[in-house]
Image (cartoon, rainbow over the protein chains, first blue to last red):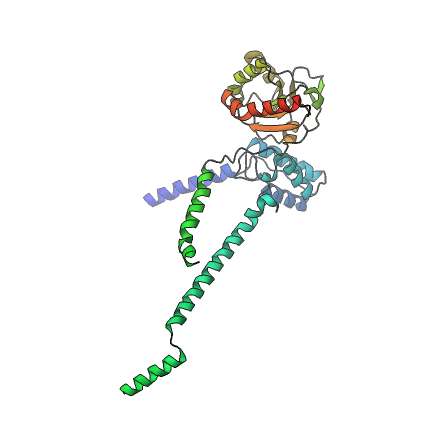
Length: 155
Length: 182
């Protein structure tokens, strides 16, 4: 009984959040290609007001306005590049979820690779040191021969 | 070399700690405007008080122009309004309003009821100029220098403390530039 109740509550929550996450209004296109471009553009562009959402997810007034702007520009036959640079001119690089590669964003683009490289270097150095210390412990050919002779004498 | 490697985890930990600690005090919601250093975007929009008068950037005249984006639907605008009245009286800047995505009657009533600090108000009903300025919410305030170049954009309500922290030194700098004839 209790599990049922919990399931019901959980379902209610899922229902509520999915309603909240829906943008209040979406645009319709006759052309499926345009529709696809529209959808990908509003997913690539960040809402300037609610900064962890893209234009597609946000319900804020500015996101609605910017979605309409994207819609209008697409209908005017503007290229995707033109639309994104229009947004960047007004709201800065920030509106792009995938920022351009430039001096400001080098650390974003290459930071993880650099950290991975450093990690690999450390692991390699550590492994080599371990191997080297093992080598020091092992006997030279001459020592091995001596050891063999001693052992033989014992027998 | 061996010692460095032994202390590497500590060094990494301290560096990461420093970066994250600094992150606690950053304000990512305060976006710099893409328009700082650019001229005011071209517009021709009606005046709020007189629907037949068309305003253009040339109408925002004055040594130092403060363009305040406001609307009657914006609670923070009501909060900052008394300070704007003081600011207009002080005569430090020429204060203009951009009535953003609002209704004309409501906006006029607001100015009647609360007082009108603005020299002029641009009536941006559709939010076109707001979009060109990169406005994402009201209130926002732009500082425009004597060459018509945007020098600062501030998002959020302005009060005496904010004025001291954010605007006072910039206004002084622009005054000095003017005095040097730059």
